[in-house]
Image (cartoon, rainbow, N blue to C red; front, side):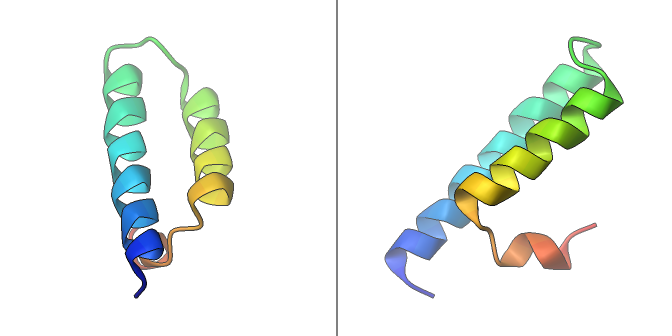
Length: 53
């Protein structure tokens, strides 16, 4: 895994933590959560995200 790909994985995982927190606080809906997550997957192209539920 390249250094850039590793950074993308880290950035994606951080984004998941943030949007999960927003969802738990009721600041975004489940639909918004999934939309943001899809956009983040496109932006960061995380390879390991496919292994996570």
